[in-house]
Length: 266
Image (cartoon, rainbow, N blue to C red):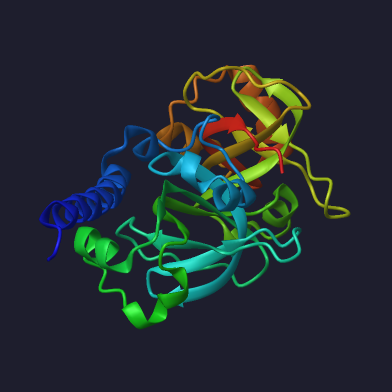
């Protein structure tokens, strides 16, 4: 004879697991940290997501990594190419906007919530219509439900070919090279020979950055045209700084920062 209490207990445990998964997914939609962008506390590596999944479940994270491959219209994988045999992490685009993976090896920045992937739950919460047959290998594996996606080029990639990035939200990891004003600094380009450093302007008052600090700046790339920048942003720069920057950076790329935070330790 079947043990009714055992059946009930198993059913309760299964329901609890499903509820936990759905709660994690819903949290990705409502968490204020995600809506407001990445923070220093949520800045992690793909290796940490893969190896410390249990500790990160349900938590907001920001990861920068190379995109490994497109899986579906709203999914792709990221991987740390510097680690041989590293696990790929599935990213689910829940931003509501299409995201085009970079054609080169430029990294992408993913901000979202860590979960263990269950295609039925993702389809139920986000109505993405993911084909279960494409995700057999990802069931139960670490995944990130992304609420923000951005390409993450290096300063030299931007200054060498800025037209590719103009008017896009990008996330730039680099070392602070020079503080040029209370709300202006440059990001060092030490990867591409002959490439220029990238100017950053911060419209709103934030914690000051320090020269030599390794940071990530998320913002919109614009062309340095004073009239346009004054019209679109509250830069609160003094006339002397404005004139000095215009002499050196007129018509060159400038990153208008939305957030600045310490880079993760790769």
